[in-house]
Length: 404
Ligand code: FEO
Image (cartoon, rainbow, N blue to C red; front, top):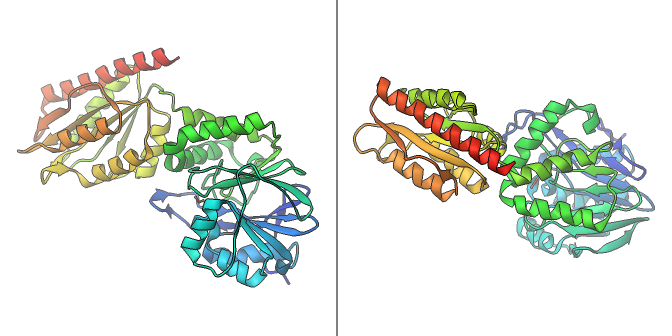
């Protein structure tokens, strides 16, 4: 009896044996409202090879799916493409139960696994570009350093023209279906963009280089198997093309207005600014931080051209939710944005000045002086806010036209 979980066959030699996490809603600060999957794979040829494992609580689900194909102790080799704990958390216990002959990882993966688990067993390092005939299949390993950890690598199976891409081309999306061609395309594009925006944006230059490198190697990828979300068996070029586009971050006519408010004044300013943006021809999207999650702001920013941020001054500083989102976006290193700052203040008025410095340090091109209002905006102040929206929309048009 193998248990309730079944493997899913995906190519001549490969099965999906991962786990579905229907309930996860927070992935280290990134909201995952559609859950996620931790995809692990089994190559069944002359020998049995496990590619990655799953998050620790899902170990039994993984081994139950393996057991639907073969006795887990038949696993002779394990390949760890990425040591982050959503893929390695159950590795020590799987090794203890299965007792594989060898475990492989990149050189940085060997170090990272040692630093995580302090295991008393050897992990074999495979080099960038190394080819290995293993268990009846021909495997090639490519290091993908900082995509998105130093240890990251991908593994190609020549016989099935299949790439195990670890986090690459993945998304947090829990579904009963395993293949992208079975899932609503809108959900895929939305969750794919969210994953890219919240995980990969700082490494966009490396994404572009990797896609070029794989292209130059002339390898054909018929099946693309990421460690999260759907498997691409029909058109892997679709998600690769989307990643290429997201890596560019070409500015669009979309302007995000992100703010929080204490007594409604900064909110009034945000609404007047958005009217100006709309009248000026921009696509305005207003995101109040008391009701929008930081990771959704990042997602919307991926395909935007302007970022306008508003804060009241509180205790000589920026409002906490605004400080949170700015710290988050700063780390993600978005590029090709213009922007401006606004906000209400009572007496000292440091908030908008500090925020302006933060936006400048994020390399956002500031296109207007901070718009500040004492206490509550009157009609004249709201007209000035509307004027700020119009001015940003005008500049955005020039930027988008200049880039097309
Ligand atoms: Fe899905 Fe970087 O772990």
